[in-house]
Amino acid sequence: MSGQHDKTSVAAISILASGGMAAAKFVVGIAIGSLALISEALHSSIDLVATIITWAVVRVSDKPADDEHHYGHGKLESISALGVTALLYVLAGGILVQSYSHLREGTPPPTISAVPFVVLVIDIVVNLWRARALHRAARETRSEALAADALHFASDVMGSCAVIVGLILAACGFWWGDAAAAAAVAVMIALLGLRMARSTVQTLLDRAPEGAQEKATAAIRSVPGVIDVERLRVRMVGATTFIDTIAKVPRTYPIDRVEEIKRNAQAAVTKTFGDADLTFTAVPVARDNETVRDRIMVIAHNSGLAIHHVTVHDLGGKLIVGIDLEVNAEMALEAAHDVANTLERKIQEEFGADVEVDVHIEPLEPELPFGVDAAPERVQTIAAALTEYAAGGEIHDIHNVRVRDTEGGEIVNFHCRATPSMSVIRVHEQVDAIERRLRRAFPSVKRVISHAEPPRA
Image 1 (tube, one colour):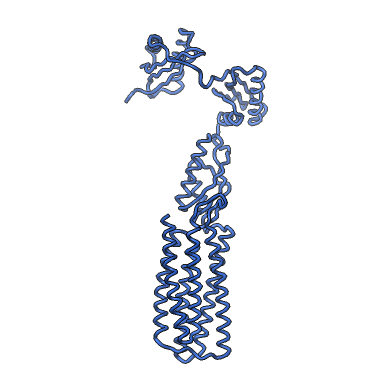
Image 2 (cartoon, rainbow, N blue to C red; image 1 turned 180 degrees about the vertical axis):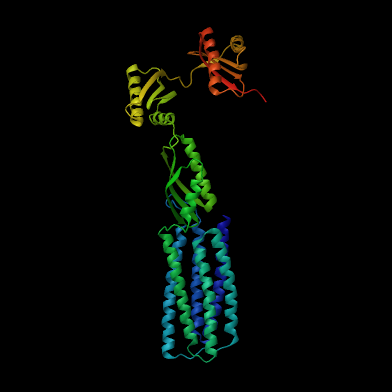
């Protein structure tokens, strides 16, 4: 809202200044009979119309997107700038025709006094202030309409200087000086219109701002998880930079990780461009450092299958793959076998027909089995057994023992400690031995879940 307030405030001040200076130059130009001064007054009148249009447009262009304008209303600024350009060309053509008429007919020079010079000097000072204020506001708010207005007032300074030169020539006895100055004003107006038209048309044609594609690509590539940017397009709508990109991400990443990459990419382009709107399309690709296990997990994930305990062996160039596949416990064996065969076939398509795949089918644990906490006496009994089985070994400090009775049997959870330097495989072997002893001693225990941790600091 502060950016919109700045734009509308500067535009409103410009209206008052344009109206006052245009009237002063027109009155003085008529009084002394100066075509150049009248032409410059008409130029300022066009600027007045332009600033009124700008003031109206910037109040609308900052409105957010709605159901009918999905990219907002920023293009109104470009359309208004194009309309002002057309007015400038009409004015330039009229001034050139009148200048030619004066030169051909030998119209008497204007009456020279100090008044027009005072008016023109004041006009130059006012226009320099307005151009600077508008240019600063346009740069801060990235407003095309304000930038066009700033260019108008900068050209007014040049026009006023040309009129001063023409009046000086007329005072020195060169009768054609005033008409020539008017023609110079017309040429400057035409050149200004050409510059404005080129910039505005490029915006309407969605030409990417200079260097924007490189900056956006670098910002997105800097986001962790982005492998590369496959395609990137940039367009400007008002002050908003719209970026559309297709980026490559690792296919092994879960959806929530990919969404995090998208959020980080939006933050990166916002930091680079300020007001930016990013459309991010993620393309999953295989990385060069993917392991065989990674690739198998991707195959299973894309097939909607739950697998674990994937083992891979390389026997002289031949892959041996073992997989535990979880399926619905109530599924018929024939259907489960078909699922396993499909998984095996997809793995062979990925690695070659000579890969050896064995799939162990096991029932998928129910997601929410009914259970209750076991009696304290039962928990103490199992905790004592776990402590006994761990005695003398590398696993110690059995704690946080929990036992739950479920429809399928007892589930035991416990924590233990091990030497920090122990390898994961060694810890697993030691804990697994304790779990097996517990299940043999307590047949009602269906599952044992342990959590090993280093000693407290």
